[in-house]
Amino acid sequence: MNLLSQPAHRRSRLSLSAAAVAASSVLLLTACGGGGSSAAAPAAALDPHAPEVADITGLSFRAPIAAGFLQAEKGGAAAEYGLNLTLEPIESSATAVSQIVSGDVEIAQSSYFGVIDAARQGIDVVIVSESYASGPNVASLETLPDSGIKELKDLIGKKVAVVSLNSSHAVKLKDSMLEQGLDPNAVEFVELPYGEVAAALQQGTVDASSATAAFLVQVKEKLNTVTVFDYGAGKYDGMAESGWIMKKSFAEENPNTVAALQCALLKGTDQVRDEATYKAILKDDLQFNAEAVAGDVAPTFGAAIRKEPLQMNADMLHNIGAIDEEFDISSITIPTPANCG
Image 1 (cartoon, one colour):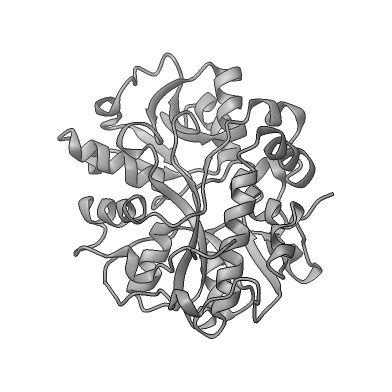
Image 2 (spheres, rainbow, N blue to C red):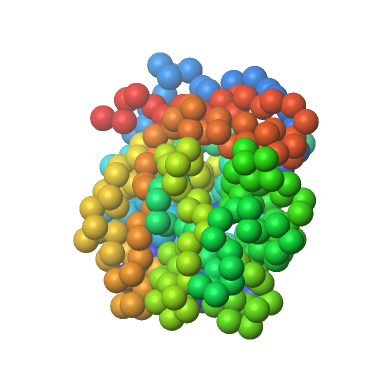
């Protein structure tokens, strides 16, 4: 059973091959500055078993990070809270934010960098759930063994590919380079879809590139690449990486629906920590081939809102100069309900 829908009216822009987006774990927009008041609803008033809206459409990449949402429907958590969940695929976080704001869908997966940018521009979005956290060996910067690149200082003067110039990978590289006294502006960052990483490295059009999931397996096994930087190691281990957003006005009008979604995602995401459950979603719902399923390293799943791991996103943007003032990410976050049952 494949729970990913693809309505005819969106097929032309959302036609995705599993190979093209199988590992897109980073969903991003550009980031630039602000604050705001708390987005939390009064906990005592919430009843996650009585959603005002039952039929919910969500957006995510056709990638492992969608597993918690898919399992929430597949495993019965959605039905437990009176919800019917449908997942539609996207290619960018910009699409997610625009469709949330337009009211086309109720919930979407996004990087936190994109949400921070949207909120600072006064766009009507809030974070309602985490999805996964950074962890070692899931995503890394790879290079060919004869490139001469072994560590961050060797990237100076080189062409480095990331999935987006404002992706968490780009932000983490810049953050770590600054910590080492290196100038990120001395690196030529370019955008490259994960599906083109292997060819770009082989052809020498880039010196190093980000890779993750099936694409990381591919370059490791076929090109014998060397890891220059692990995006989930060190201080980034456990950092909130991507989560679920909703339109703030919709959330305010339908607080029980928000709570129901948060609780369903909490349970579904917890269930995909089971390896067999997770692998079944990769195979049956995300349509990964056997090689990709076998080689995949699961993200560190978790849906509960965590203050400090979320705040790291805003702090990093401020550190690299992408925003000119500190930003309190809790001002656009709705905490996880305590009464999921």
